[in-house]
Image (tube, rainbow, N blue to C red; front, side, top):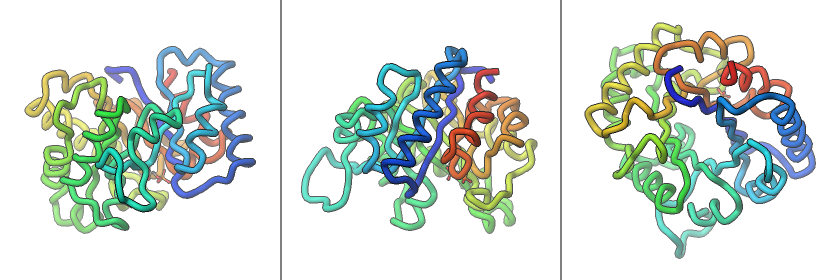
Length: 251
Ligand code: PGA
């Protein structure tokens, strides 16, 4: 890994206050017992728990983030959460453009870009997700789809400090399937190349891999060139499952 890694957990729509607090406390205890100076660690709980988890994480090395934010600063958007609200609740990151949002909520690159810009304007680090479907992979379109998503979802004013890109093949999310290490390395090198044409400090941008990352495959994936961390769904829900993945970022 060439830049400071980020190991991020995305709890999705999972977690109630009591069980989630217990898992978060267990994770914080592990972080405090380890030397985590070399790696950033993040949990993105559901919006209802951002404030509470951020309070628990205060004074530790654990960052808390949102899973989405609205592109507008405020207004008549029932049920949505603004980036400033996430920040106010204690978040420092926001995931935008996760494939589940792109699919379930018809989010286009344009919307994702606007959301990333809103996150950055509120002082959050935007984690912009991209990834091909199985159909796109099988028809040989992976690299062109990724280029299109990176180019058109990248926020204006993106820097290595305010933007992270997560490559998450849609078919690998929650399925137990992962691309081969060679395939991941190919896409990550390609994304780095794309970013080099779009921004100045592209070499410093963290490029995460996500999609069925677990303790047993994390080390191999994290060792690849241009893989600077992981975005983890299912295996981030329990501290004992997430910890071995965090450890690959500390190595
Ligand atoms: P998964 O999810 O680790 O459960 O495959 C990854 C993600 O959607 O971020």
